[in-house]
Length: 165
Image (tube, helix red, strand yellow):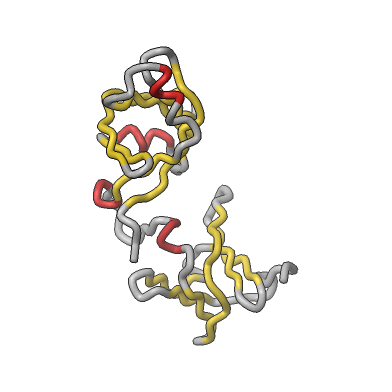
């Protein structure tokens, strides 16, 4: 079952004396986090009073966090968003929903997605089974992506099998 929450960053520090926290975002674009009105930390919902960008970081002022002492208590905590608060474009899937999917090649299970690498250009699925594979997440190699049914059907070519075993 999919979690109703998605990790989206980590509180790495405080900012100023009035309870602001500095977020290391785990989004393709840090500005995406500015669109959310609420976040979840340790199961508790926090309303956003103010949000801004500072270089590649996000500064948040959360309701109820009004002093540096309160903000310090949140340092190193994971920041979550509610899945229901996110609208995805057609065909876009959360990385969290790819992890654990069964990967099929020529109708045979070759392993499960254990990680998704995000280098410039395109994502790469790390698939581990009896062997390890690095599969670019492009139409040429990903024939069918079906998270609802729990699988990905891929086309393998020479060189995708990793030396790691």
